Image (cartoon, rainbow, N blue to C red):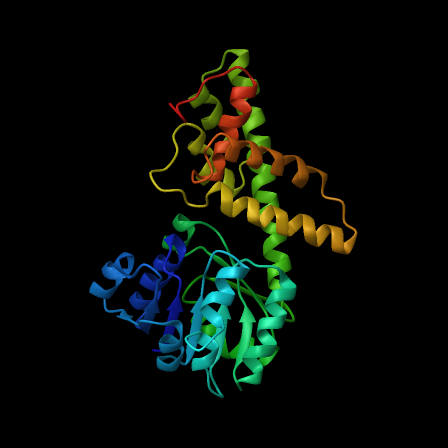
Length: 297
């Protein structure tokens, strides 16, 4: 059993805490809206009032927040997690942010005598609950080895991809592919539908065909009905697409399908669908194709 801390108890973060508690770990948590963490408190999580309190109470601190601004907000300042770190502690950042910012944060963590890895994950709430999440880690090899047993309690596939920031580069590469695949899947569904095949049949066939990646299998049905709560909304996905295009610009890698897919995310925002799951790009393309959907009615 490890003494853990977790900052950021959103959809994925809260499920990770639930999983870590089920593995017997002690967890101290912090969330900006503390009421959302009440169900975890009922399961044994201790609730802190500041990120610093989490770090002071824990040997390993996890954070999963929306972007770089949010990470600075919980990491820096007198109540930030870095202020609560001491030699021998570890900070594991699961947030998807720009790699250079993560490397900058790692330097500040090391100045406090602790160490940091970036450790984004690939998967959804369903893959997390099923114990199939993939975990990428960027940082020192010895730190990776120290943290690996705990990370294996989050997901069965834990891969050290290199130095600080490189797990984020890998995560960005993964996420751009998710959105591009979703747009291609939507094109296939709509082509079949306008040919006279029902949407339900088209989705069923495609989700059991050669193109059925794990993402298509669990998110494909969202073109029939959006989930009650977005697993990964338009704003979050567009943030990652913009990170990808900035990284591509920096590294001289053209990302044409990423750029096109990003425009559909912008269109979804223009249609007031920013808080829906990014699978709503199907509905954007459907409207362009002259087909009405249930979204927005």
